[in-house]
Image 1 (cartoon, rainbow, N blue to C red):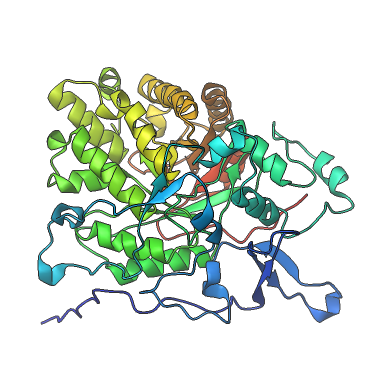
Image 2: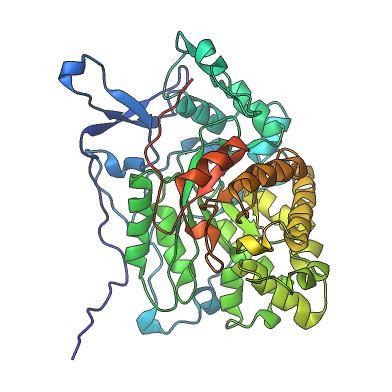
Length: 491
């Protein structure tokens, strides 16, 4: 008889310590002593006569030899300036409800992270989001932080920066010789870059995602109804960022979603994203037909108060477009897209995500939550690539992108899906680039020869990566718990 060890109900330890052959270092921008930007220095062979190589590092304090984590207390605040920022207020927040954790029984309930803090929100008296600050001509501490981070701590451009930038094909990018806070502000104001940074995630070490900045890599984690635990999810997050993941999506389903997310957020130095419709579905016992705006709105507020930095919203899945997928080989492969398609067909109504998009913007603006506009009708096989459903869905996602900018909110457009042939990726990328009008692309990556039934964003072939980056994809998404290699900046 097999005896299964009982999983701990709370995390106790995670992987820590420097990565072999390197050490954690910090740099402070001139004139800003409150800002400490992390990097990693790799020791080179003594025979080389070269100094240590400094690289971008999203691993947080977990790779600092002097850091001892206390998961119950959470990470120390990396954005101490939030406590004195104007136009923000603390308040009591919504009460925790049994359905937030899937109505789990008391003996199976994961305890909430003790590091809970009173939530903040915008008062409406002035700018709250990084986009609003940028449009107002205001450079925030987050903008100064990410500029120093993109420059790897340099205070000025290296000698051969101009020649290096000029050497090669830009593919339409406008990468400067040296990233200044003003350049960061300008790119955000133009809607071409975002800093995902919920005001309720003070542990976050700010980073920027955009065409003219270092390419970032996302890792997916998540509890499910059949496996994993809170300890494993926190360890997955730490393990992902240790090996180079810049952002993490918590795609948890099943029980204890709220409390697991608590532990992840309070111990995460990188942006955390979610798909709110997943938790909303759990609140109605998995029956998509019982979803409604009130359940979804409550879920948005719940997650925004916890500190989630970006939401995937499948607002492009509309009633009229669902029939366009009827003759597909692989149907609708997006989970969020299939949930909303089921709702639209069962009620024969327009998607409440589309109709209530303005209300969604109002909620997210109060907390500076960024959008990831989910491509819910993306193809799941080469046979379905670039069909009418995919193009229509992306087109409406683009229209909601324009509305989002009008509401003062940053975000990206998720465009994951295969192309029939290698050259199709270039044509596809250019077509989507024209349609998105400057919105960031957050793409899954896949070899162009993958078979029907494989979800493109669950593959990570480097041949696809290269083409996607050339056509403006600023955030690459790889398999759950995986991450990209450490990166260095080239000027």
